[in-house]
Image 1: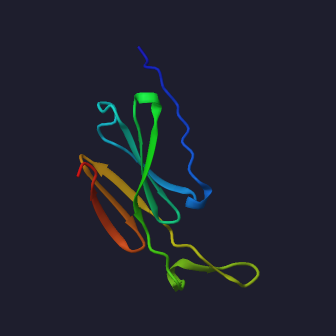
Image 2 (image 1 turned 90 degrees about the horizontal axis):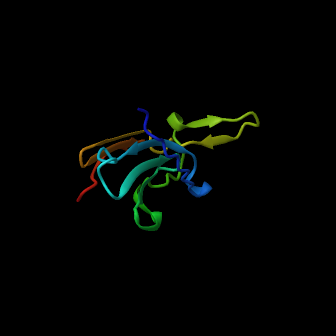
Length: 116
């Protein structure tokens, strides 16, 4: 027997940039309050929780990458008109195991206790 699939669209402000990575709570099926993490190209990591009561949604910024003032050779590129564009890369990798969340961006690797 095949289980029914529920599809929910979650939109975020365009100022966050494009989503680059996503991870679901490992206990998503068992918990009453459902949680996902979304990393964005602007370096923001958002935890979205949706409860059962009226399906309310709560977004919390877990991390915001500091803005860099000058582009480096590794993350800048030249466009056709000769100008230089800067792409920080944002959140590049994300993993959620148990209560621990680990992610990587241009500044390094970070770890967060989601239950703490």
